[in-house]
Image 1 (cartoon, rainbow, N blue to C red):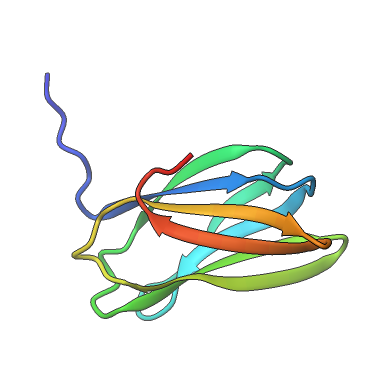
Image 2: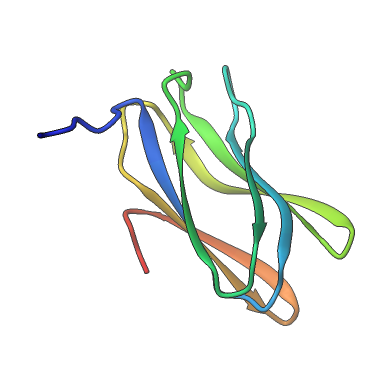
Length: 111
């Protein structure tokens, strides 16, 4: 039996290529209807995926990734100008350089 994908959702892949355990992770889009999706902890070298409904994003929005590390909370705009009419997956890769976290987001499922 053929199942239609949910055309109101985009899949977000998150690849943690760091040695850090990111706690209390959330992801959300700005604008109308944006609310955080709780991802929980993302362990070092872990890869996860989550579906996000962006039907409420009727104008271009930003994708925000929030996390806690060593008791401090951080947020980063990881992708600009998403809109509900574009349902291609987004891959967020997290890297570590000089003890700082770097985020790279691209459309598509990228390992």
